[in-house]
Image 1 (cartoon, rainbow, N blue to C red):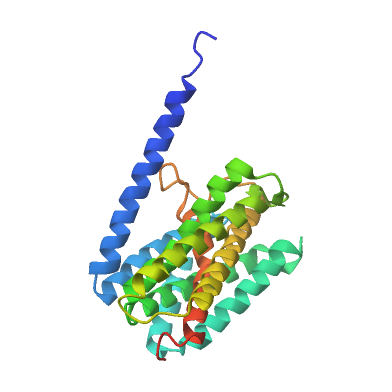
Image 2: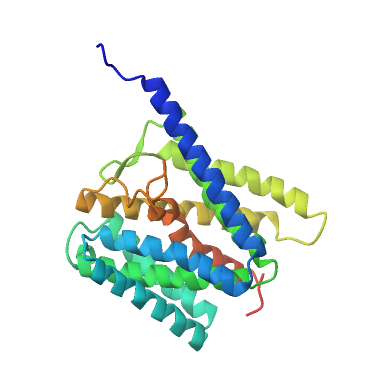
Length: 284
């Protein structure tokens, strides 16, 4: 064809945009995580959460600007109320786990009914994102809090990276073809393997500086977080399929929307915090 596009250049351009966006986001995130005061961190995370909430509402076909602004205001009010009430972190975590248990049951077992109604999807999103905002704020204030936040996100990122490359190279058996055709069982195991390997290396490094968790508990905890994080990705995929939407948004060049980037972390966070509480890492 005379005007056939140069696909290789197009792919290289998309890859360059994707990498550049990722590096800029990482730099911005690390600056906020390690240098902002607690209130500044809460505001920074709040901006991310509000963008994700707006995308969540659009995934339920709520297009009205007025309704979406009202939803954002409601989420902020709920967060302020939680900061004022100061609930026990264990209560917040258990609530988040129960909500995600229902959502994951809906993802894998239930095909229709109230759990997939737009009303329930909006309500569950409001609860999940409010609790996520609160837990990230709480975790940052704990002993070595910024490093724990970074450690949690590294688990999510490593599981994602391992699943992507192993899935592309060796993936043959589909994990959930009706929900996310691109995910494979081999990819999931690849992500878990990478998480396990890095966890072992980190354990060997930090044990020379201060006492750490027994390696067995460290591995079990990180692997559990990595495993359940897959559920968040599948749940969002189910939301998008329900409304025939490819990406939650287009705010991030080469990456789609905010919700596309944090879906795995949303379900992994309460599991991570629960594990730290059960292992006695934080005094609460």
